[in-house]
Length: 191
Image (cartoon, rainbow, N blue to C red):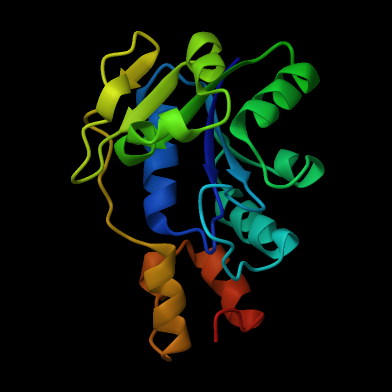
């Protein structure tokens, strides 16, 4: 099976994440997309993340009705900070029957040269790239293992905006999958 890995903190998961993941699973060569909930991105400053199990639970609830989308907690069991190359090695060892590819926005592709062992990632895995405003993918744009998915939806929703809205007593319910919103609301997250 060809699995697309869509990494993120999902703090919280929103409809933009679902649109990209669903599109990749339904309209590319991928059979499934796994949303990999990351403990901490080593290229980002440590932010106040919800506890791992809460973010995982929100994603799990959001994906319940999609047979072609799954949530993965693989990075919870790896050393922090989590590096994509280590995650790929761990997944390949655990699921040798699957082929794994990455899913990322063109902005992340543009900074791929900063990733640990980026050359090994490019050599052994394909990267499905969706467009992001203001980014053309940089030096890896025409790499033979980079697959551009130009028709993928460009949804400009940010988890930061959602957290700020909730903190300011505004409803962000329309920006999140209902199951994730309900869980976040019941748990009083981001308030």
